[in-house]
Length: 524
Image (cartoon, rainbow, N blue to C red; front, side, top):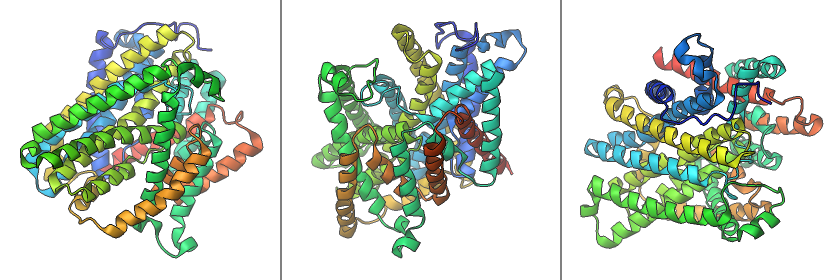
């Protein structure tokens, strides 16, 4: 339980002056720092964890103005907006706009920024509506969200929980310094064990493919094919879940999961999401000018494919993030971009599609973690009305943080471009959209989609083994694979009690060290 006074079901508004003003200020700094890190180091840290640390520090500052931040609800709102500004600036807008700088199409940068802003805000609202549905239950793993909540609670309570968290933080930071997969190990003790085995095996196969098969799996499109098949099956499974009646969904759910959003409500949200993404795609086509440069049939195809890609990317990234804490947004975007090449889209429309889809995916992962944190802090839906109010405030403050991230990128990206600094992924996307479609490539995708489809079909929607296996194949990090498998063995041997809160500390320690190391490397 929480300490008396720390979380008394306070209904804190996102527009409360001290929360809103401080949130804006901290969001600007978060956006700038995350842009700096991704431009010079190539990745961004876990923004949820960083947001939590900022909120906890505020609570400890002995100033009258900040005394209200001892409230975990306020800490959660600050953590949420800091997180949103970080991922929307670096992983979404900066990445998308940099594609056009590399292509030499600088006149398209501002339209892309507008498209990214639309994608970010729309996705944040949709994620808020889809969270805690039968497809994305709040009771699922969402490991970084659990770690963030545990960190905030331990910081508030101290005692044994605080000690356990500190132990995990220290070990996580030290392990990260030596290149050991602290976060991966921590995630294993929170997530579904079948999902973790699938992820670990995928990571090992990708990392040691040359020794196993005599060729580098990363130089092929085999992992992408597996993800297409697994993703298609996962999409079918999701449709089946939300197409059932509310009563049947509750009856057939083996884990007896209770959600605050019913299956029938989920259908409506998905339908609205499709319509909104369709309108967003049309708006992007109009703002960018491609609406006048493409034939009618090609424009219709582009709008439909962009809409489909955005919706499916959101769902797949969300599923991977929910079950494992990993989300292969880059790889999933590459899949839709590659298929778009075979549809005959020219460079600019294809780059716009790529930038828009890459602005959508990360929202579901990072925001899902933030909402998981809030869900835990608010008592895991014990009071439904209180939970829904708090979630609504998180969505509002997340949208504010997301927009701030976009604005910061729009105002500062030229400084980075003039120094030839940008996310490495942007260069990869820019190079790929200029490539020619290869019939052998599509053949590879279709062939390897079959095993991905079968694995996901057998494993079922509750474990997402196929999607997580494909995720592992798409990530070149064999050390994490070893860490994940060893952690699974340890978990089977000793259970999870010993690692309670320490697992969150490992994830937080890894994230904090990565943030500090990345910041130092970006400066020096």
